[in-house]
Image (cartoon, rainbow, N blue to C red):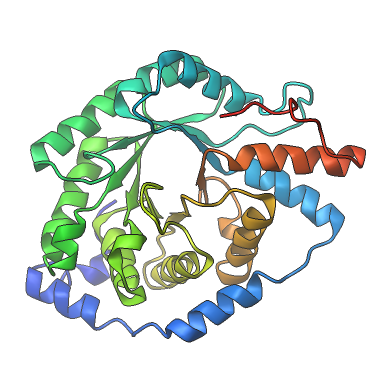
Length: 314
């Protein structure tokens, strides 16, 4: 996606980009957290809960990003993504399976023809500490192996030291290397320290061509929270209002229960509306969330919770 014409001058140099990003309105932290908390208390009816559970399942990037990942584990995860509940084929498939680049070909083969996407982390995930040519090769390899989506991490060191143009140009380069694959740009919000930085990173990512902006890698202490996700939702809403371009949002890390997932869906509905209530525009980065959603889904259908062997252990 080319930079929106209205912002061409903004990205012309490091100084103009810095001036723009630091000119964004400051975040009222108290107000942001209060609004996020307030929306999190909304109750929904049983019929709406059933809809929300299926919607949340369809939005999951079912993820395994461990050093001990094996081809067998990835194939099992792919099978679960396609048929989360083998005993109930009305259960929707997840949006994607997210793996390291060396597992992308295995995931692509296992998911072929299913409609479930292959997402792959790249760019020296999770730290992002590598030379640009290494990051670009990582991205190209993942796409060549069958990745439909690339989840990249920004250079937080460059961002925090104010080298915004370096971060911008790196995102642009990875976007180009990703070719037809959609690009999710991960900020690692837990390392950005302030809400103002999260707002700046959101706009920087969108200006650079991100298809999605994503909270976290799931590898640090603070990952997705209702407040930082609300802030990013406000950013994509305002960006579309100014440019006509819609950007997706992906909270990742720490979202483990159905109650958590529904809180995030309420945030989406109340902040950006129905246009984002679709897995093309909103995702959950999660590994254990699906199990709880499946148990709650069965509880609604049968009136009782399943036994401990009802869902697989990831």
